[in-house]
Amino acid sequence: MWNAEQYDSRHYYVTDYGTSLVGLLEPKPGERILDFGCGTGRLTQEIAASGADVLGIDSSPDMISVARSKYPSVKFEVADGMTFRSNEPFDAVFSNAVLHWVRPPEKAVESIAAALKPGGRLIAEFGGKGNTASIVEAVGSHPWYYPSIPEYASLLEDYGLETVTAVLFPRPTPVNGESGMRDWLKMFTSSFVAEERFPEIESKLRSKLYQDGVWYIDYVRLRITARKPLS
Image 1 (tube, helix red, strand yellow):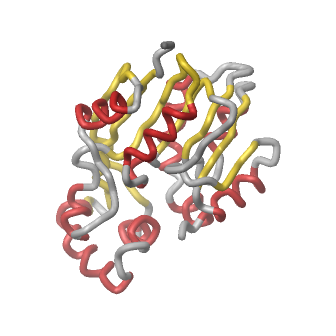
Image 2 (cartoon, rainbow, N blue to C red):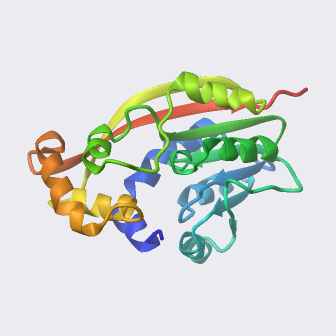
Image 3 (cartoon, rainbow, N blue to C red):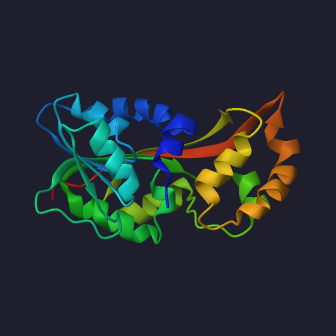
């Protein structure tokens, strides 16, 4: 269960980094755009401010409730990204920091491909190969999907989408305070890691990810753009 209040107050950097992704999307007035995994809706609102007709979807009712409260003029819907379908196709699908959570990944790509009209575009960024490697090692089993560029480009191709650009890059990200790592674990691993393990995991990570009084998350991001062919 996602905690929308904690997400906004302690993990706002996830959305902050997504602002440049909106620039890459270049939304235009009148375009129909799907924000796939919109969270609390700040980036959805930025897209809507361009004049685009945007729909934000998220599987978390708590996230959607907050998004609707903050941005009442924007359309939001509780929906599972693996099964989402729309009667009216979209000019673009936008997704920030979401697709590494959706498994099996084939279902997400199938939904995205189905949502796009011919000539439509996908603009996405999420955890790629090597993302949170130190944390993964300390935690053990995990639900995340961190593909390489060739792996994800091949998956997109399987569902009729052509990769246009793809970049895999490190983004070490500071998190606030001495409790930063524990806050991160609570937000992003509590659905599959017992909270009693957090001190042990934090201890394992301190020598690798704690520097000069600051915790850093060892993010590696995959930023990818793709298109659905016209025919």
